[in-house]
Image (cartoon, rainbow, N blue to C red; front, side):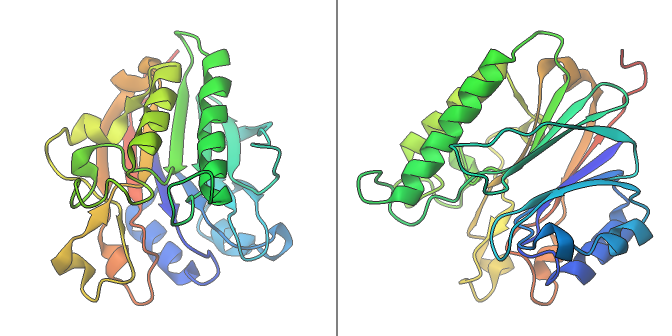
Length: 267
């Protein structure tokens, strides 16, 4: 099974990019974040034409939004309302093999890493704390869970282009890294990307639009993640960050990530 995740930064604006990526990579399941469209205006037909017969979407106008498209059947799992806000940041489905897939778009947190003056940053930390508590309560050794999405935190020093310069920049501050560590610990999550590309090798998935030549400057951050519970670690086979779409005309500032699993023998 090939699973891809991508903060597409407006699915309608980037629909041709999604179609090209899907045609080239052929993921069995595609998780999107920041779709920025209401459910009734989502271009579902285009995804059906690409072979995705199964889908669940949660969107709103101009902001946020998540979606899961699949060639494999699934049942929809009730998704929690986080921080008392129905702002379309999470979807969950269960595949026929019992694997539960969670697609998240964690709040970005604004520009100032101070909860006393920045409500967006306070919301981000509260959201992450709720994730920790929720997964901790559901913890079990045999849970078969995958968590993907734009988590808006680059936790490791080599997940950013310059650790010292970004310590006070939202996405890499110590308090955010600490909150992410708590989510990791809530279910002993395995970082699937670092499973294949361990430290100290740099690993990025996002590059700012502000850089005139993002590839040459390579001032990236790893904001997008794929995690699995320990029960699924033996089934991980490969991972790739696809840089090509970041270089296409009017791209998303995120690159898509694909992870391959071999679920033969999964019980």
